[in-house]
Every structure is written in structure tokens, then in C-alpha cells.
Image (tube, rainbow, N blue to C red; front, side):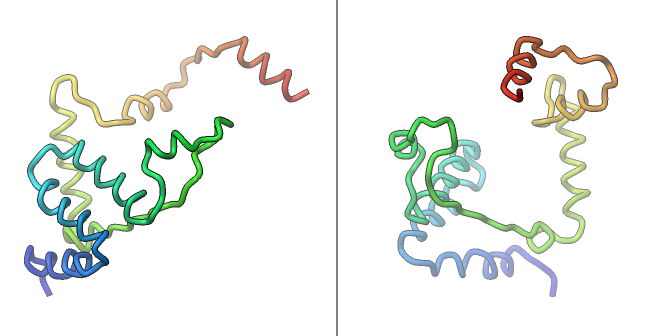
Length: 142
């Protein structure tokens, strides 16, 4: 069976919309606001709603207020979302994305997140390090 917009909608969204009322709020927001609008802030809000609201954990402002200030991560649960791009977009999804990345990187001044770090890792040039920090780390190891 070919994957079409209609079958994808039925297979992906319909089961999600049958979740409890708490999740309905989240997915109705996703359908309405993630398609063709200000995706960055909408996506951040979706993650917050899924990772906290939908699973009964603290929102980020609540986690900060409840933090024990030990420097570790805040206490809370986890939300995991697994997406199969091949199921959603078909078998050529990776090449389609690579074409997008090539087009994006061709824009003057644009770079993919992490690309500078990956490029720097390929360099065999000497690296500058913070000698004081290294000395403090060594002192802690003794």
C-alpha cells in the first residue's frame, strides 16, 4: 500500500487523537500550529507539553523552582517519542533530507547545528587548553 497523506493521517493522527483528554489538547495544538507557522516556538511548546504536561511531570519553570541546586539535572520523569521517517516519508527520506541540507548550507552564512564542531574534530592542528583547569583536574585525581 502506498503511503499517502490520507493514509498517513489516519494511521498516525487518528490513534493519537483518541488518547485521553489531556493529550487531545496537545495534539490539537500540533495540528493547528505546527503546520506552516512559527515552528520553533511551537515545537518547543509541544516538547514542554509532552515531556511535562502529558505525563504528569513538572514544567521547566516548576523544575527550576524544585531543583536542589546540586548541579545535577532536575528531578522528573522522561518522555520518549519514536518516529519512523521511512514510515512517514517513504524509503527515500534520507536522500531527500540530504538534498535539503545541501541547499541550506549553500545559503551564505548558514550552517547546520554542530557542523563547526564536526569540522573542528577533523583538524589535526594543536588545540588550546586551559592549563589552570587541567592542573585543578589533576589535583582532584590525586
